[in-house]
Amino acid sequence: MLQETAKILWNEPVAEAVYRMGLTGGVQYAAADPGQFVTLRLPGESTPLLRRPFSIHRVHTSQGRVKRIEILYKAVGDFTRKLARQKKGDTLDLLGPLGHGYTVSPHIQSAALVAGGIGVAPMVFLAEKLKSAGTLLKDSVACLGGRSAADILCEADFQSMGIETQIATEDGSLGEKGLVTTVLADWLKNNKPDMIYACGPMPMLDAVSSIARQHERPCEVSIETIMACGVGACLGCAIKDTEHGQGYGHVCIDGPVFRADRVLGIRY
Ligand code: FES
Image (cartoon, rainbow, N blue to C red; front, side, top):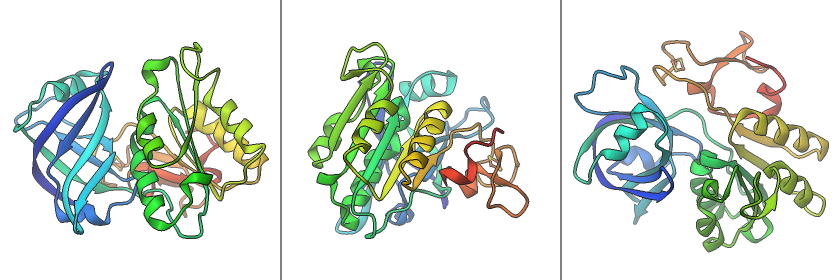
Protein backbone atom coordinates (compact mmCIF):
# COMPACT_ATOMS: atom_id res chain seq x y z
CA MET A 1 0.00 0.00 0.00
CA LEU A 2 1.29 3.43 -0.89
CA GLN A 3 -0.09 6.95 -0.81
CA GLU A 4 0.73 8.93 -3.91
CA THR A 5 -0.40 11.79 -6.10
CA ALA A 6 -1.95 10.22 -9.16
CA LYS A 7 -2.58 11.94 -12.45
CA ILE A 8 -5.91 11.43 -14.19
CA LEU A 9 -5.31 9.94 -17.64
CA TRP A 10 -8.97 9.74 -18.64
CA ASN A 11 -12.34 10.18 -16.99
CA GLU A 12 -15.02 9.23 -19.46
CA PRO A 13 -18.72 8.44 -19.23
CA VAL A 14 -19.51 4.87 -20.27
CA ALA A 15 -23.19 4.76 -19.36
CA GLU A 16 -25.73 6.98 -17.62
CA ALA A 17 -23.81 8.54 -14.65
CA VAL A 18 -21.14 5.81 -14.86
CA TYR A 19 -17.53 6.74 -15.54
CA ARG A 20 -14.25 4.98 -16.17
CA MET A 21 -11.23 6.79 -14.77
CA GLY A 22 -7.63 5.93 -15.63
CA LEU A 23 -4.96 6.94 -13.14
CA THR A 24 -1.21 6.69 -12.94
CA GLY A 25 -0.41 4.08 -10.29
CA GLY A 26 2.77 2.87 -8.63
CA VAL A 27 4.60 -0.45 -8.97
CA GLN A 28 2.68 -1.85 -6.00
CA TYR A 29 -0.35 -2.43 -8.27
CA ALA A 30 1.54 -5.17 -10.15
CA ALA A 31 0.75 -7.44 -7.18
CA ALA A 32 -2.83 -6.20 -6.65
CA ASP A 33 -5.54 -8.82 -6.29
CA PRO A 34 -8.99 -8.44 -7.82
CA GLY A 35 -11.42 -7.28 -5.15
CA GLN A 36 -8.82 -5.03 -3.55
CA PHE A 37 -9.61 -1.34 -3.56
CA VAL A 38 -8.07 2.12 -3.50
CA THR A 39 -9.18 5.19 -1.59
CA LEU A 40 -9.26 8.60 -3.25
CA ARG A 41 -9.28 12.15 -2.03
CA LEU A 42 -9.64 15.29 -4.08
CA PRO A 43 -6.64 17.55 -3.43
CA GLY A 44 -7.42 20.68 -1.46
CA GLU A 45 -10.86 19.38 -0.51
CA SER A 46 -11.71 19.46 3.17
CA THR A 47 -15.17 18.04 2.61
CA PRO A 48 -15.75 15.20 2.68
CA LEU A 49 -13.09 14.58 5.29
CA LEU A 50 -13.09 10.93 4.55
CA ARG A 51 -11.34 9.23 1.73
CA ARG A 52 -13.66 7.26 -0.54
CA PRO A 53 -13.10 3.60 -1.50
CA PHE A 54 -13.29 2.33 -5.09
CA SER A 55 -12.69 -1.21 -6.35
CA ILE A 56 -9.81 -1.64 -8.72
CA HIS A 57 -11.47 -2.17 -12.10
CA ARG A 58 -8.31 -2.93 -14.06
CA VAL A 59 -4.54 -2.77 -13.81
CA HIS A 60 -2.86 -2.10 -17.15
CA THR A 61 0.68 -3.46 -17.38
CA SER A 62 3.25 -3.64 -20.11
CA GLN A 63 6.20 -6.06 -19.84
CA GLY A 64 5.35 -6.56 -16.17
CA ARG A 65 5.36 -2.82 -15.41
CA VAL A 66 2.25 -1.01 -14.20
CA LYS A 67 1.21 1.63 -16.70
CA ARG A 68 -2.09 2.72 -15.20
CA ILE A 69 -4.95 1.60 -13.02
CA GLU A 70 -8.61 2.08 -13.71
CA ILE A 71 -11.71 2.52 -11.58
CA LEU A 72 -15.35 2.29 -12.64
CA TYR A 73 -17.76 4.40 -10.61
CA LYS A 74 -21.25 5.77 -10.51
CA ALA A 75 -21.71 9.50 -9.88
CA VAL A 76 -24.44 9.33 -7.23
CA GLY A 77 -23.25 11.47 -4.31
CA ASP A 78 -21.34 14.71 -3.75
CA PHE A 79 -17.92 13.10 -3.91
CA THR A 80 -18.51 11.00 -7.00
CA ARG A 81 -20.23 13.89 -8.80
CA LYS A 82 -17.13 16.02 -8.12
CA LEU A 83 -14.98 13.13 -9.27
CA ALA A 84 -16.93 13.03 -12.53
CA ARG A 85 -16.01 16.69 -13.14
CA GLN A 86 -12.27 16.07 -12.84
CA LYS A 87 -10.36 16.42 -16.09
CA LYS A 88 -7.49 14.64 -17.76
CA GLY A 89 -4.26 15.99 -16.23
CA ASP A 90 -5.84 16.79 -12.83
CA THR A 91 -4.40 14.99 -9.83
CA LEU A 92 -5.90 12.97 -6.99
CA ASP A 93 -4.55 11.66 -3.71
CA LEU A 94 -4.51 7.87 -4.20
CA LEU A 95 -3.93 5.21 -1.53
CA GLY A 96 -3.76 1.52 -2.36
CA PRO A 97 -4.02 -1.28 -3.03
CA LEU A 98 -6.02 -2.00 0.12
CA GLY A 99 -7.91 -4.92 1.63
CA HIS A 100 -8.21 -8.58 0.86
CA GLY A 101 -9.35 -9.70 -2.59
CA TYR A 102 -10.89 -12.74 -4.29
CA THR A 103 -9.14 -16.12 -4.38
CA VAL A 104 -7.55 -16.79 -7.77
CA SER A 105 -5.89 -20.16 -8.21
CA PRO A 106 -5.04 -22.72 -10.91
CA HIS A 107 -7.34 -25.10 -8.97
CA ILE A 108 -10.30 -22.96 -10.02
CA GLN A 109 -11.03 -24.35 -13.47
CA SER A 110 -14.43 -22.73 -13.93
CA ALA A 111 -16.24 -19.91 -12.17
CA ALA A 112 -19.47 -17.96 -11.97
CA LEU A 113 -19.04 -14.20 -11.59
CA VAL A 114 -22.22 -12.52 -10.33
CA ALA A 115 -22.55 -8.74 -10.36
CA GLY A 116 -25.36 -6.38 -9.45
CA GLY A 117 -25.10 -2.97 -11.16
CA ILE A 118 -21.86 -1.16 -10.38
CA GLY A 119 -20.82 -4.29 -8.44
CA VAL A 120 -19.35 -5.33 -11.78
CA ALA A 121 -16.39 -2.99 -11.12
CA PRO A 122 -13.99 -5.61 -9.65
CA MET A 123 -15.25 -8.43 -11.88
CA VAL A 124 -13.43 -7.43 -15.06
CA PHE A 125 -10.11 -7.41 -13.18
CA LEU A 126 -11.11 -10.74 -11.63
CA ALA A 127 -11.83 -12.28 -15.04
CA GLU A 128 -8.46 -11.09 -16.35
CA LYS A 129 -6.63 -12.61 -13.37
CA LEU A 130 -8.57 -15.87 -13.63
CA LYS A 131 -7.61 -16.09 -17.29
CA SER A 132 -3.90 -15.61 -16.43
CA ALA A 133 -4.18 -18.29 -13.72
CA GLY A 134 -5.54 -20.83 -16.22
CA THR A 135 -9.25 -20.81 -15.34
CA LEU A 136 -11.25 -21.91 -18.36
CA LEU A 137 -13.28 -18.85 -19.15
CA LYS A 138 -15.21 -20.75 -21.85
CA ASP A 139 -16.64 -22.92 -19.04
CA SER A 140 -17.40 -19.87 -16.87
CA VAL A 141 -20.18 -17.32 -16.79
CA ALA A 142 -20.67 -13.68 -15.90
CA CYS A 143 -24.20 -13.08 -14.58
CA LEU A 144 -24.96 -9.36 -14.74
CA GLY A 145 -28.06 -7.84 -13.19
CA GLY A 146 -29.66 -4.46 -12.64
CA ARG A 147 -32.93 -2.56 -12.56
CA SER A 148 -32.81 -1.78 -16.28
CA ALA A 149 -30.57 -2.04 -19.34
CA ALA A 150 -28.68 1.11 -18.25
CA ASP A 151 -27.36 -0.79 -15.21
CA ILE A 152 -25.78 -3.56 -17.29
CA LEU A 153 -22.12 -2.70 -17.66
CA CYS A 154 -18.99 -4.29 -19.15
CA GLU A 155 -20.84 -7.03 -21.07
CA ALA A 156 -18.47 -6.58 -24.04
CA ASP A 157 -15.41 -6.87 -21.78
CA PHE A 158 -16.49 -10.31 -20.60
CA GLN A 159 -17.45 -11.43 -24.08
CA SER A 160 -14.08 -10.34 -25.48
CA MET A 161 -12.45 -12.66 -22.93
CA GLY A 162 -14.65 -15.55 -24.07
CA ILE A 163 -16.92 -15.66 -21.01
CA GLU A 164 -20.58 -16.37 -21.57
CA THR A 165 -22.77 -13.58 -20.21
CA GLN A 166 -26.22 -14.02 -18.69
CA ILE A 167 -28.21 -10.82 -18.20
CA ALA A 168 -31.23 -10.10 -16.01
CA THR A 169 -33.03 -6.80 -15.55
CA GLU A 170 -35.92 -6.16 -13.21
CA ASP A 171 -37.89 -4.26 -15.87
CA GLY A 172 -37.05 -6.74 -18.63
CA SER A 173 -35.39 -4.06 -20.79
CA LEU A 174 -32.38 -6.35 -21.38
CA GLY A 175 -31.95 -10.11 -20.95
CA GLU A 176 -34.27 -12.07 -18.70
CA LYS A 177 -36.92 -10.16 -16.77
CA GLY A 178 -36.16 -10.68 -13.09
CA LEU A 179 -33.23 -11.02 -10.77
CA VAL A 180 -29.65 -11.93 -11.56
CA THR A 181 -29.87 -14.68 -8.94
CA THR A 182 -32.50 -16.45 -11.06
CA VAL A 183 -30.19 -16.63 -14.09
CA LEU A 184 -27.39 -17.85 -11.81
CA ALA A 185 -29.63 -20.58 -10.39
CA ASP A 186 -30.63 -21.62 -13.93
CA TRP A 187 -27.01 -21.78 -15.08
CA LEU A 188 -26.09 -23.90 -12.06
CA LYS A 189 -28.61 -26.57 -13.12
CA ASN A 190 -26.15 -27.60 -15.84
CA ASN A 191 -22.82 -26.38 -14.51
CA LYS A 192 -20.69 -26.99 -11.44
CA PRO A 193 -18.21 -24.10 -11.12
CA ASP A 194 -15.28 -24.40 -8.74
CA MET A 195 -16.11 -20.97 -7.31
CA ILE A 196 -18.94 -18.45 -7.27
CA TYR A 197 -17.80 -14.85 -6.90
CA ALA A 198 -20.27 -12.06 -6.17
CA CYS A 199 -20.30 -8.30 -5.78
CA GLY A 200 -23.41 -6.16 -5.42
CA PRO A 201 -26.09 -5.10 -2.96
CA MET A 202 -26.44 -7.04 0.30
CA PRO A 203 -29.75 -8.80 -0.52
CA MET A 204 -28.18 -10.05 -3.75
CA LEU A 205 -25.14 -11.34 -1.83
CA ASP A 206 -27.43 -13.12 0.64
CA ALA A 207 -29.33 -14.75 -2.21
CA VAL A 208 -26.16 -15.77 -4.09
CA SER A 209 -24.76 -17.23 -0.88
CA SER A 210 -27.85 -19.30 -0.28
CA ILE A 211 -27.90 -20.56 -3.89
CA ALA A 212 -24.21 -21.49 -3.55
CA ARG A 213 -25.05 -23.41 -0.37
CA GLN A 214 -27.89 -25.29 -2.10
CA HIS A 215 -25.53 -26.28 -4.92
CA GLU A 216 -22.64 -26.98 -2.52
CA ARG A 217 -20.35 -24.57 -4.33
CA PRO A 218 -17.80 -22.34 -2.56
CA CYS A 219 -18.68 -18.67 -2.72
CA GLU A 220 -16.85 -15.42 -2.07
CA VAL A 221 -18.61 -12.09 -1.70
CA SER A 222 -17.39 -8.51 -1.67
CA ILE A 223 -19.07 -6.55 1.12
CA GLU A 224 -19.80 -2.89 0.62
CA THR A 225 -19.95 -0.73 3.71
CA ILE A 226 -19.12 2.79 4.81
CA MET A 227 -15.39 3.14 5.38
CA ALA A 228 -13.71 6.03 7.13
CA CYS A 229 -9.99 5.22 7.26
CA GLY A 230 -9.79 2.19 4.94
CA VAL A 231 -6.77 0.83 6.82
CA GLY A 232 -8.10 -0.76 10.04
CA ALA A 233 -7.59 2.27 12.28
CA CYS A 234 -11.08 3.65 12.95
CA LEU A 235 -12.96 0.35 13.55
CA GLY A 236 -15.92 1.84 11.72
CA CYS A 237 -16.38 -1.04 9.31
CA ALA A 238 -16.75 -3.93 11.79
CA ILE A 239 -18.91 -6.90 10.78
CA LYS A 240 -19.66 -10.17 12.48
CA ASP A 241 -17.18 -12.70 11.19
CA THR A 242 -17.28 -16.29 12.40
CA GLU A 243 -13.59 -16.81 11.68
CA HIS A 244 -12.28 -13.76 13.45
CA GLY A 245 -10.95 -14.35 16.95
CA GLN A 246 -13.01 -11.54 18.46
CA GLY A 247 -16.14 -12.48 16.50
CA TYR A 248 -15.85 -9.29 14.46
CA GLY A 249 -13.76 -8.58 11.39
CA HIS A 250 -13.18 -5.37 9.52
CA VAL A 251 -14.29 -4.97 5.96
CA CYS A 252 -11.34 -2.76 5.03
CA ILE A 253 -8.57 -5.13 6.12
CA ASP A 254 -10.16 -8.60 6.50
CA GLY A 255 -12.30 -7.97 3.40
CA PRO A 256 -13.93 -6.52 1.45
CA VAL A 257 -13.93 -10.05 0.03
CA PHE A 258 -14.94 -12.81 2.44
CA ARG A 259 -15.96 -16.43 2.08
CA ALA A 260 -19.74 -16.11 2.10
CA ASP A 261 -20.27 -18.59 4.94
CA ARG A 262 -18.03 -16.48 7.19
CA VAL A 263 -20.14 -13.35 7.14
CA LEU A 264 -23.53 -13.84 5.54
CA GLY A 265 -26.65 -14.86 7.37
CA ILE A 266 -25.34 -12.73 10.22
CA ARG A 267 -26.62 -9.19 10.21
CA TYR A 268 -24.47 -6.31 11.28
FE1 FES B 1 -11.55 2.24 9.44
FE2 FES B 1 -12.17 -0.15 8.44
S1 FES B 1 -12.64 1.78 7.62
S2 FES B 1 -11.26 0.30 10.33
